[in-house]
Length: 376
Image (cartoon, rainbow, N blue to C red; front, side):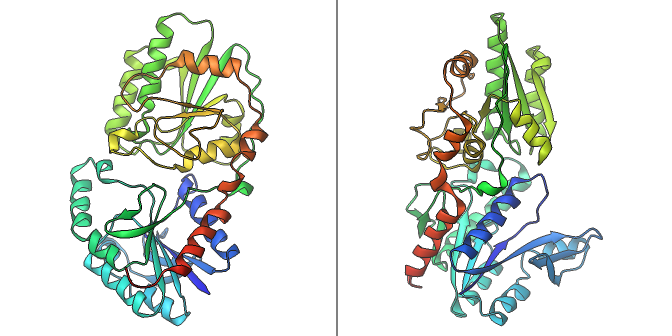
């Protein structure tokens, strides 16, 4: 059985999405589906292309017209599917529902292939804040239910049984353990280092850590706490807001911005860190239940962490702290006490999530997809 994993965007080396997608493709191959990766890419010369396993499938050209073509030119992908007898299409949704995408999915279904679509985050409407973002969301909302009608299922990391009127395959975000190193013991004695890794959006709630640190340092504590922020800000307004909080709170010496780093440089920051920061404001985007990739990456590295959403895979784990899903500052003293009084070996934390490997999660998708008929 042959498969194609379709992604509507390109990748950067520092973005965790590429690691996730490559791991999913590898896991599908292990599960018995010979899977290639098809993705959109802007080449160094400005040409906009569809790639299959890093080889150009079609060149849409350059400039504005080529950029627009991305939204409706799926012919080369369809021809690749039929030419190579692909019978399973896995689509990573980019909130890009349109009549053209619907037509493409219908064509693929008529070829006899099963089609499942992953929605990485659901619900997602409240994630759109800018004017042009909301315009794109409006188009998506006009067509997403019609798109869902033509799928065999929607893959979700939420607990939703039905999304846009379509049945779901519910899995957890997974981990490719071979790509994530176990952190070393930090060896910090009189200080504690926190780490937060993300493409930073307002729903990550890093501002709650900062306001917590402002309150913490008002009490003249004996233990210094530092917050390492790894990643770039997705919205300029959020970046300005966070920096203003830091300046107004006079805690700039305790906040270290590393930007987007990966590989050995990122490992070095983890090795000096004692505790990690997950999402602390998913409630701002209307989400209560989610199984984020970040929580799993922290656990795979063997570092305790805090988050505020409901995550069934971690809520009962002893090495995590749960924060309230509200706007209150994070209690830094609580984290300090946890770090000083509790000790969980990195190896033990990692072992606790062995069942969350991508191989096991994507196997669920394959097994359930094989049972699906084309009738909704």
